[in-house]
Image 1 (cartoon, rainbow, N blue to C red):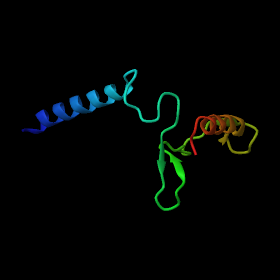
Image 2 (image 1 turned 60 degrees about the horizontal axis):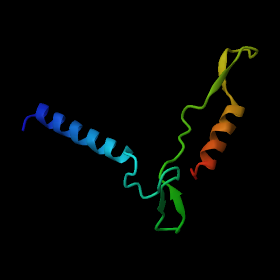
Image 3 (image 1 turned 135 degrees about the horizontal axis):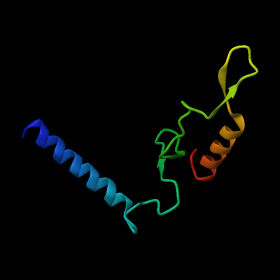
Image 4 (image 1 turned 45 degrees about the vertical axis):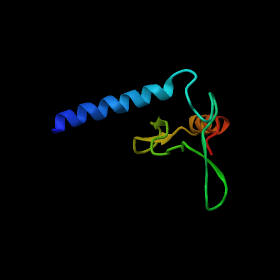
Length: 90
């Protein structure tokens, strides 16, 4: 199998797997609308499968500052984090 055939096969299989997990009535163990959790074997805590990355928070321009730079929009960050927690991210 050459590289091109391998990529075609891999992409087709990955796409089929992705679409099958989105089908209504699929085999999602968590069910619709709930966060899937994993058990931490060291502590016994239930941990959400998804985490919340903090690399790019929403920003606002600070034009009054001596140097023009963007500052984190704390109100928007609070709303985003509250939403994530309400939906099961821990």
